[in-house]
Every structure is written in structure tokens, then in C-alpha cells.
Length: 139
Image 1 (cartoon, rainbow, N blue to C red):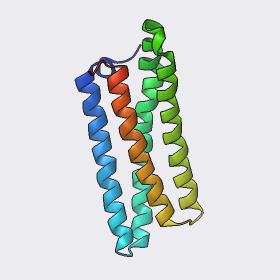
Image 2 (cartoon, rainbow, N blue to C red):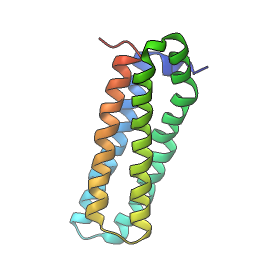
Image 3 (cartoon, rainbow, N blue to C red):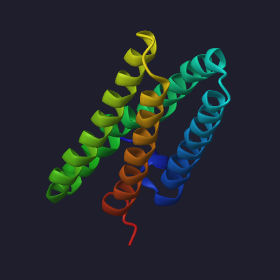
């Protein structure tokens, strides 16, 4: 059984928008650090951003998969394919975040990681809109 906030469009949307706004701002700040050549600060900021993705957005995804998606699949079996697609979005978020972390630990390219952060933002934004539309009844 999922919590009530996950089943209400307005509450769920506000969760999505707040989390997305935070990581979007953090990513913009990170880009500025690297543009100014502040590599050490950038690397420290990345650890904070990755932790934020894990603790907020990916944890939210886990909660949806353990509650909301199971409930919706039971109540509306015709949405089974949609739920599979939404879970794939979550999987992509986890994989991209993992690739960023591996690149960071291997002292890889900051430019490559910045592209991956932008990818996270795009996947997350589209995922949230689809979830709101298909599962929470936004018209």
C-alpha cells in the first residue's frame, strides 16, 4: 500500500517539482564550478549531488515501485505496460547515476559527467510528466 501523497496528483507533482528543481539548480551550480576551473570544489559538489539523487529521487522511485506501482497494477491491470516503462525510467536513473559515480571515482572527465547529469534531468522530467498523466489522472 502506498502513502497518500503518492496517490494524489497535486501532492505527488509537488514532490516531483521540488526534487527536480533542486537537482537542476545543483547541476547548474556544478557546471559553473567547472567552468571557473574549480575542480576540487566541483568534485566535492558532485558527491553531494549524487547523494541527493540517491536519497531523494531514487529513494522516491523505490517507494513508488514498492507501493504505488503495485497498487495501480492491481487496480488497473491495463496499465501494466505503462508501469513497466516507468520502472525502466527508474532503472535508467539508477544506471546513469551509477555511471557518474564510477566516472568520478576513476577521475574521469567532468565534461562527460556533466552530460550525464543533464541526461538524468531529462529522463526525470519526462518520467514525472508521464507518471502524473498515466497513473495520477492528469488530463
